[in-house]
Image (cartoon, rainbow, N blue to C red; front, side, top):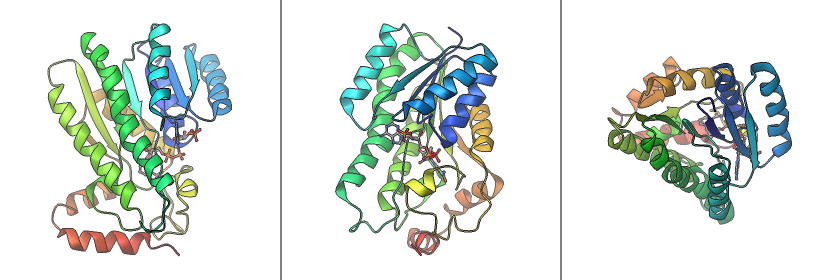
Length: 259
Ligand SMILES: NC(=O)c1ccc[n+]([C@@H]2O[C@H](COP(=O)([O-])OP(=O)(O)OC[C@H]3O[C@@H](n4cnc5c(N)ncnc54)[C@H](OP(=O)(O)O)[C@@H]3O)[C@@H](O)[C@H]2O)c1
């Protein structure tokens, strides 16, 4: 097997494009999402174009049983990933009191628990083989509180903190952990989050998922600890260290106020 990379949320957006970048670098792939027909179409395309092996797995990663069954399935197939990309995630533009608990809970399960659970399942084998890459997809939202997307921003702060901590623990093992922090990016995210009309996205030309994916793959391969995509996002993430937290919350509130 050619350095297999396992990618969650590979049916659209950044995960879909990451699959294409990894395929172009001759990695075999394991693609996971709920919309399997999209994964199967991508599998056909990438196997034909690059002569790699692609496996697909349909599953809802908010469910603990699904995550365990998925791990067991990869074990059965003899797949120990070289790369684990925890990319699947979603947001919801709404006030905290109006957003449903079901949605908030699913977001916590996917953005935080699934990412942590899959890291815990695969890391021991990656460490034992003495090489590997984890890429956890956070966001520039990780750097500040996010009114109207409170749970989402907090979930991404967790991803950043968790991934930095394990990156430190993994030093010297041959396995690295990278946190990807994209800013607003063209994908299905805005429609899923009902956020198309927020100032943060409205009328803006956003970087494509393909651009973010190319940047992310390079950062993952280098073992970079934190990878903030784009010069403006890098400057904004630095600025969040200087402004008082209260002001940060107000800036984010203005940017995300639903229309
Ligand atoms: N786009 C942005 O502006 C932006 C900015 C910063 C960070 N991010 C982060 O980037 C990551 C990728 O998002 P994207 O922008 O590429 O959005 P996207 O186009 O909506 O893609 C999200 C992916 O996650 C999968 N997914 C959602 N719920 C799932 C579940 N319960 N189980 C398994 N897979 C699930 C979706 O597949 P199925 O629906 O087929 O399951 C899809 O493949 C997310 O973590 C997001 O928070 C995005």
